[in-house]
Image 1 (tube, one colour):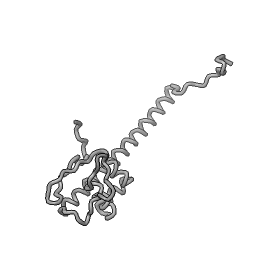
Image 2 (cartoon, one colour):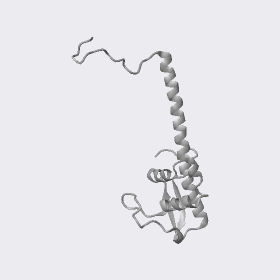
Image 3 (cartoon, rainbow, N blue to C red):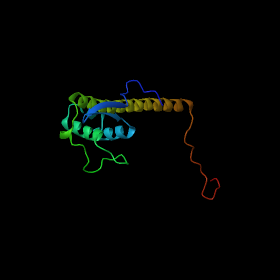
Image 4 (cartoon, rainbow, N blue to C red):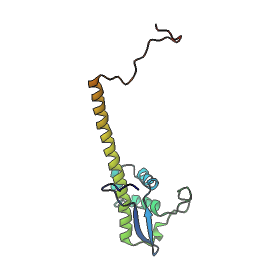
Length: 146
């Protein structure tokens, strides 16, 4: 098991749901689903504040899944019937939002580092005179040089 990265939210969260303690796990698939819904870091920051985002987040996190990880049609959790303490609802929404924000920010950092690395590599190639793409030969289709 790899060591959690600094600043990354906990992979698991415990909440009280329908009078029973429930542990939720933030898998890559679940995080990917949330990030696809949010689209960007700005939207992810709005989850605790935006009613529509709260709804889709809670439905995504709390609805039952089939053997393929999909929410069966008509089986979405009914938010108006949730028996969950207010603090746990807030905690759950923040947990989901923090995971998405962490994902978007670290992905952006990786892109920036790759861009820097690519720029440095291009500069090094230009300075060294190394050619990465072989020059086109003047060989004819019959295999003889022209």
